[in-house]
Length: 394
Image (cartoon, rainbow, N blue to C red):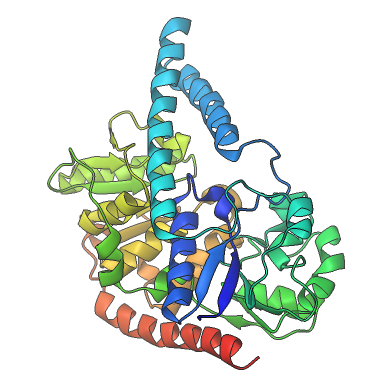
């Protein structure tokens, strides 16, 4: 019988966040291919006590309504209600694609999401426990505190505990998080993080060693990802894919200019309601995690400020233009995680800084994806070795 392992990851975002769902799937598959029987805990971490899908849909409706009121002031109240309902229905249908992806490809410990108190009382009994990846250690998502569930504090005394590529999502810890970090990590058998800043934070507040490893999505080959990819219907033969979170007029202006210069239409994947303001773009709502991969794979150019859209552009060798999330500042980890990835793969020329002009040198630049993949293979081996050593030598 294979040894069992429990995964704590950002499962609460599996129903509407492409990066979260795909990194969770990648870690699950990696552990399974190592001969383990993985299971993922559905954990809400005390963020929301209500049904998470219902919460996000309610929030999306509010944002859609406010957005329509702002960008279409000519609409009557009745028309605004109709458009809000239409967009919300599209989002609900897309969430079904997310749910089918996770239910078809992963095994979960529990059906209904557990709070921290419930997890403490009814935790899974397995051979190993692992937490990661994504921003599960971001204290700003938890009122400035460290979430004990994501630090595996429910696991029994003496259990094997491993951290694989979690991110703090910040450059330093708030006071409340500083007070518990050493205690929470003291029982870990192996610690890795996704960014260099994570190593610095752990060293600063605990003195414990930590290793930088790849996001789980980068542990799988392009061929493996294409096996699960799908392409939505109704797309142009050639297109620019726009997938962005930050509400930036400057970024939109640059994407419009790229479209005009290349003659390519823009297909917008509006996970962020911000993207719905781009009325001259073709929206694609019927896109779950499979379609996210397919859209990036078949695009001529990807314009994004997303870490995981950047990851899949590199994996699929799709030319990408990576915009910084300007409101966070160049030193913030929302930008630094993209910087770290592109710097490690010698692809910093993909970054479109706020002062960078859109011209032929930007659009027609030569991207050495082959070299990037050679560098990626080396980093992948190091990351896989971390997991193997953590699991085999405890």
